[in-house]
Image (tube, rainbow, N blue to C red; front, side):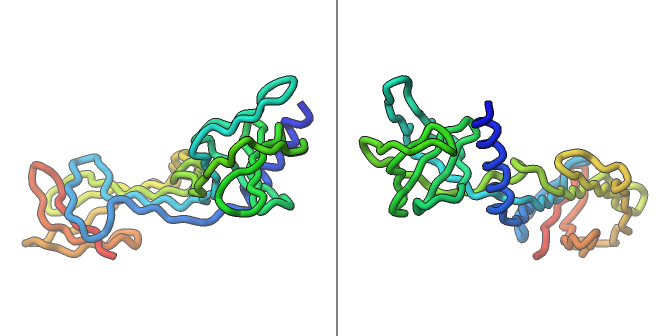
Length: 206
C-alpha cells in the first residue's frame, strides 16, 4: 500500500511538472458550418496536456514470483531517472529507456524497485493526453435561434466540466438586412452566411 501511494504521489507531481498549456478550438476557422437551434457554434477548451509514453506492444517480464506487465496503449507518465527516459503507469510498473533510442529496455515492478532487463526492446511513442482528459476551462457559444429581427446566442463557461451558472449569459445581435454579415461575440468573430429553418450557416474567422 505504501509503494502504491508513493507511486501515485510521484506520478501526480511529475504530471504537474510536465504539463503543457494547450488550446483546442472546434470547429476549425474558415470552414462553412451549420448550427441548428440549441447546438454549439464554437467550443474553446484550455487545458493542461501531459506528455505520456505509449508502448506499441505489451511489456512483459517474468520473475520468480510473478510477472511484471504493462499493457500496450496504457499511458505512462514520465518521472525523473538516471535513465534517458523513465515512465510509470498508474497501476505501478515503470518502463525505462536507458539510451534514449525510443525503445524501452527495462521494466520495474514500481517506482522504487530495481529494474529488470527485457528480452527484447519495446518501441514507444510520446503523445499528449487528449483534450479534456485532465479537466480544463471550456467556453461554449450556442445558437438559440431568431427572435424578431435579432439573432440569439447563449454563452457558457465550464471549469473541469462543471457548469458555472454565474458565467452563463445570453446575447442578441441585430440581424442584417442581407447576408453575409459579420458578427463578433466574446472575442469570437464569424461570418453569418445565412439563416433559415435548417439553422445558422456560418464561418468562423481567424
